[in-house]
Amino acid sequence: MTLFADVNYFEPWWIQIVRAILIFSVIFGVLPMLTVYERKLLGRFQHRYGPNRVGPYGLLQPMAEIVKFARKESFRPTTSVGFLFFLAPAVSIMTAVGGLALIPWGGVQDILGTNVGLYGMDVSVGPLYVFALGGISFYGILLGGWASGSKYSFLGSMRAAAQLISYEVSQGLALVGVLITSQTLSLVGIVNAQRGMWYFIPQLCGFLIFMVASFAETNRAPFDLVEADAELVGGYFTEYGGTGFVAYLFAEYVNMIVVSAMATTLFLGGWLLPFGIHQPGWVDPFVVLAKMMLFMTLFIWIRATLPRLRYDQLMSFGWKILLPLATLNLLVTAIIVVA
Amino acid sequence: MPYDPGSDVIEVVRHPQRSAAASTYRIFGETLRGMKTTLARVVEGPLTIQYPEEKTPVYPRFRGRHKLHKFESDDPAPPGLETCVGCSLCAAACPADCIRVVAAENSPENRVSAGERYAAVYEINLSRCIFCGYCEIACPFDAITMGHDYEMSDYTRSDLIFTKEMLLAEPLERTPLRTEGE
Image (cartoon, rainbow over all chains, first blue to last red; front, top):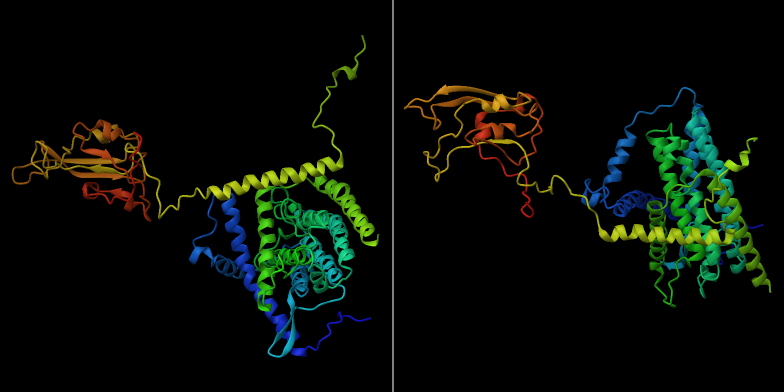
């Protein structure tokens, strides 16, 4: 059994470390900008400007907020379970960051005489790895809600549990359609298999199911019942303030990035450009980033558009519509590929 | 005749029964329609008025901070004299009791107003004023009028008591005036 996919080239050991640091720092540089982008765009959707006071065009807003959060008093409710209360946000953010390693930013490049793949790692079980991390990240939510020792937090985390379980199934099934078509589990391999046609055309149904399920997986509107602020105050992070809250917030945004990257990789051809354009290798990450921004914009757009679903609607939509559709999609794909 | 509860049941049809496929199609269609609606809001652009930089123009009859007046060069009385004669009618009319007038006699060597007397002290406590404009109506000489300035916040209450000098001074034109309409 090989842990890594057969990469067919030699990579010095330090490249792994450099790449890890690079990916981490770039993503955590983009992340605060993303929060500003979301709030500004959301403002535009509501006839407002959004934050525009701190720094040029309000771009330093996250700085001000991080300073604010970092200076907050660290506290926990008396009913909370101390160890788990502080562990939960850490679990949440670590699993979210773990997903970043899988994003393929580009193909193998020849940089200064060494072959370097523009991705954290090319695992032979790519999507499974992401799903495994998604499964663990849900412990972060569940433990956080339970360890808070508050009813609202607990209700929020129970909802999260039910929601993530229902939608993970549909997401997985929608993804299997792509795996069957590309006949590989390596994310780089999936992108390379899309050279003829991006998979959102043959897998349109799967693409839509994947996107809907992704909204639920990342707890974004209209599936943000987990943190339904009108009923549950804040859901699982009601009792968190300061750094714990920031950790959950960042985990949510990193999850959005990972899901966008997965959608880009699986359905939108990763770093490939349409109409047979062959860009130089260094452009690849920017192509991926642009496609991810497309999905980010979609996330925000949907958030500005749709109201939150009722809980029974969420459940019946997940189990009665999305799951049969995903199964049907999988079956049809399998029959077409085999026949 | 025994009561038949069945006759009181009203048939409620919430929506036509649709198949799962039809409702899924409808969900996506309605979502796209909603997204079109929100996108139109982006195209329209923000409606926010960036307050300290941009201000909403006020109407000409807007009742802002008071002004006391002096005679101009084209008036019958000698220019530079105060219009206020210290009659205290504004103070009497004021429902919030925020105007204080202390009158004094004019003398040939110290002539302040056109009448017999003048207001030696004229104070308006703007933290009490309700901007009703009754003082303006009560004044027989149009000596006090309501201006357009509404930016009067201050850090201490005593700073909000405007003296005669402050009310007489040419106000900073801080408020744009709406010209169309009226």
